[in-house]
Every structure is written in structure tokens, then in C-alpha cells.
Length: 251
Image (cartoon, rainbow, N blue to C red; front, side, top):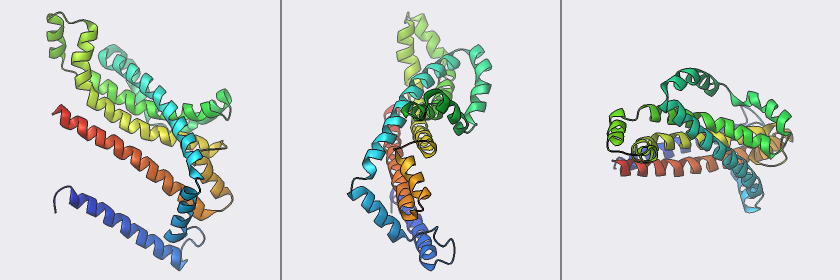
């Protein structure tokens, strides 16, 4: 058993053990009666949602909202992060409020977005953008601040322009931290979009979850949560694999 196989088997075993406990609780109905359906009921509801194509239009809505928000988060996060990392004075002024806002639940801003944009696509996109902004700006600022100043001085001494210094010195040093911020940012952008859909929406993964809850269709609710989790896990897996490849390439 090699190093790669052992953690995977442990993870699979943990999931199977959790499913067994869940099934025992669901079948016995001794605890949480009506709240914890059996794994079979959940999987059946999930299969119906997938086989009928019910979930896919809602998935596309959520992906569209999260992707649009993440694009804004990426642009402004990298731009602001570069400015803060390159200028100690700006970093000293803006770093504390950014860290405070990063630790604040973003859902408190949603009523403001609803007043500005209404119960439309833009309000969910804004939630996704604000959620994804902070991991990106923090990672970018730290990366820019930690670029080796000796390399910058050497580049300037041989006549490198600002653009050349940025592309040849800053970017190679910052690429991995920025991508780490992107990996975190895309996940929380997805969470932000779904949170917005839970409150006011007529489509999306959050919408079908809250609709199933409102009508007490518990297996469907858990099935929607399970499929949402599966999609988020796949996105995270792809980003992680890309990050691992980048680290190997950098070495």
C-alpha cells in the first residue's frame, strides 16, 4: 500500500462508516424521526433529479452567478492585492479593515444588494463577488509583499522596464499564492451565490434546496444538498490538481 492509496482508503472508509451510521439512524427512526431519511431514499431522490434532468438548469444558474461573481472577485482581488503588496503605506492603511471584513459573514450585506439590484441575477452575483474577493486579495497582497526585493533591484539594474519586472520577477513568485487564493475564492463564491438563492430566488441550487425544505420534501432536500456537495467537491478537486501540477512545475 503506497502513500497515495492509504489516505484514499481512509477517506473512503470514513465515508462508508458515516453512511452506515446515517442508515441505522434513518431506518430505526429512534432519533430525528422524519428528519433523517435513509440513504436509499436520498439516493433515489438524487437519481430522479439527475435522470430527469431536473437539477441541471438550476446547476447552470448557480454556476453562471458564481462564475460571474468570481470573475469580478478575481479582477479586483488581484488588482487591489498587488497595490497593497507593493506599497507598504497602502498596506498599513487598508490591511486591517480588509482582514476585519474578511472575517465578517458576507450574508449581512445581502439586504443591501437586494435594495440596490432587486431580487435579480445581479444580487446573487454580488454575493459571490464579495465572498470570493477576500481570499484572493489577501493571498495576492501577501505574495506581492514577499517578493524578493533583491531580484527587483537586479532587474532594475539591468534596465528592465516596469512591465518586464512585473512579468519576470513578480508573477513567477506570486503565481502559486494567487492560484491558492483563487482555489479558495471560487469555493466561497459558489457558497455566496447559493446563500443568495436560499433567500430570494426562483432558480438555482439554493432555490431547490429551500423549496424542498418549505414543502417538507426531506429526501429531495438532502438529495439536492448531496448533489451540490458533489459538484463543489469536483470543482475543488480540479483546482487542487491544477495547483499540485503548478507546484511540481515550479520545483
